[in-house]
Length: 263
Image 1 (cartoon, rainbow, N blue to C red):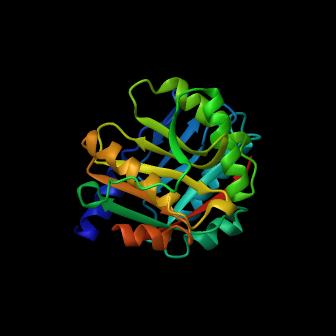
Image 2: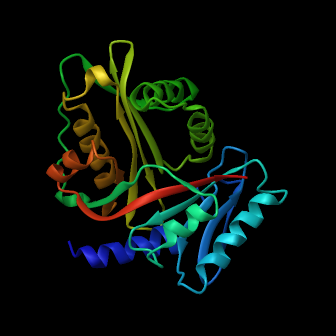
């Protein structure tokens, strides 16, 4: 895999030419910026790509904060998804000065689907169940709250919306169950017309970590991606999942930091 070439294609297909992940939202594009806005209060809103320099960065940031102060942005959470290869080099500092607050940095990791293991090996007593309804989304949300220690209310609402809108199978969610207990959950989002699918979630509750469940869910989703003809899988990896993904064959191509601000 040519890492520079794949990163360039990721930037083009998944950022500059990104499509909305919500039927009620819209993508707005200028020569220097791509952002998603609109939709409901829990629809993701933010900047996906920017092509800025020292002379244009502050003006672009000011335009986002002005939008947030307006009727459409007021009360909304807004994210500027910054990658380490974005320019100018001090864009993160400029965002902080404008009131954006960074969340923890994650590693952009990408692998060719054809090179990934697809054999699912689960510990005894654990099974995988597809998520197809609101009850399943509740299980995903419960895992998220236990695994990451954060509210899953917004995530639950967003997943319910996506589930209702994606009859084409571009969203697949899976929960690992130990008896009646959800112990790990993950999803895969396919972007039609691109070479990429994203792996999201993958949280395992603390008492079930270290037993190979996260790895099994990666293999499960790799098999689904292979069946759909997807060429690459992409993950925004935490420090915990990065070494597992590296052992599976994912390469670190950049880092990404969510810069958040409230309208």
